[in-house]
Image (cartoon, each protein chain N blue to C red):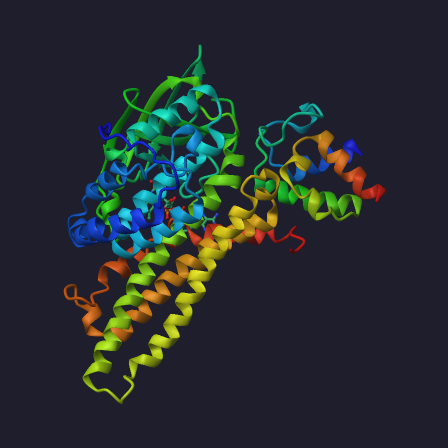
Length: 79
Length: 393
Ligand SMILES: Cc1cc2nc3c(=O)[nH]c(=O)nc-3n(C[C@H](O)[C@H](O)[C@H](O)COP(=O)(O)OP(=O)(O)OC[C@H]3O[C@@H](n4cnc5c(N)ncnc54)[C@H](O)[C@@H]3O)c2cc1C
């Protein structure tokens, strides 16, 4: 799953750094992801994992790091 | 630069912020409005009067020495000011946006003690978010804060800083550090004597002429605690953007209200000449009154919407709220032009003339600025993106 998340981030996150160098707790916004890019990441994650994030999860903290994204995706796939 | 007047001591019981602001608008700002516009001069009489009543920092809670005014009170006061002098109202609105950011996010010791000092001296605060190189995209910066040994240093090329030459301090956005990407921004309180402004060009614009908004090269340094702790992105989402759109919308509503006042008086004067015959323009007046009511309800509804969740950072950061506050700005900036334009058709040549009691030239020129203060196309672009993931209310 982390591999797929990193793939999405590499394609849509428009980060200032190489995705493979990121720690799972690195702040993605501090790493250059704009709110515009975070929307694209969200859409690509929904497509990749065939999920739809609940309204309550559509906030900055869900997309803050690889770890928080994983938690978010797991919450939706378990639901 | 520094104000010498101090706020009057607080009486027990609440200060009627709306009445005080309305009085100043009618007695001080209104009579000077045409001159402020014609000469493009700073409306110092309005600022001095607000200062003398402690109204510049009205939003500060009483525990920090302010008046503890609500956003709706300041919003109503700005409607009254905008009705008399849009330039004065714009200066006051921009200042209150900075105050709100400091009250909500300036929580470290240095910024809290600044708050007390600012209330006492009734400092006027300006804003430098726009930058040469990023255009109107205020969510990215070129310049960066350089922090070393507890001291920050910053230089910004600002194409427009309203009342920069009259401000006692400026909130400036910048990248967090030289290594930060363009959207990892902070906001910094810059103040004299460690603030230097080198003016670039003049402000000779179509409207809001009294805001005195030329470009500047801004150089500042100071205690690193003058950098607000929270990321600018969060401050913008929760406070600066919604409050800017609400307070701008309030003064634009004031402009529209002034135009409607003139159109109403014009139609009533016509009616008095021939009692029994409804003037042809009365129907158009009915039409534009309905439009004005939409505008008024939009602004007042948005203030309520903000106040209902103002203590809840999570709800202030929700996508639906962001879309709503963006839509408010785009609608309000469109409605102000529509109302003024229709009132001009009602008053006809009397409105087109630059003199006389029905003149609407200043109102029309001022209203045209609303759509470009952070371009409506940019804001709609943001909403277009947000709506791709919004789940509805
Ligand atoms: C009266 C007044 C006072 C102001 N005071 C201040 C102040 O005190 N401090 C401050 O920092 N700023 C201030 N501003 C600046 C203001 O907030 C805007 O940032 C500025 O007006 C934008 O300038 P622009 O139109 O040249 O740039 P842009 O926003 O770049 O717009 C230029 C053109 O590019 C288009 N465009 C560019 N990018 C996009 C995009 N992504 N999506 C859609 N369209 C796009 C726009 O539609 C427009 O046609 C003030 C402006 C006014 C009018």
